[in-house]
Length: 90
Image 1: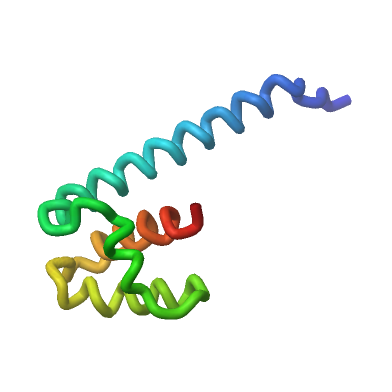
Image 2: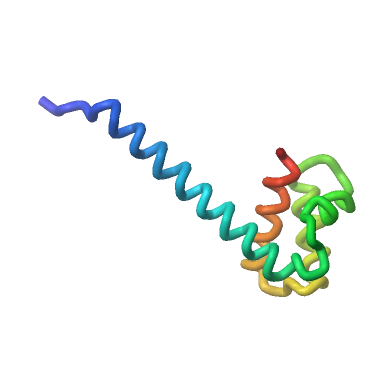
């Protein structure tokens, strides 16, 4: 007979996922501050210029803009875009 995991184990998993999410968000904020913060002190100033309400359209606009605006590296762009999209959803 197989033993069922205790409910406490699920709480540990959830806590780990929350911690990982917080660390990822902090890393993305740090990336924005390092690469964009010199000229754009507040990320909300960048978000004001976005056209279109749908998230895929916002991502597309940001990707096009950042590819010609000091973020040629696709991985760097993706991290900054994720950070800005997350902020715009709040």
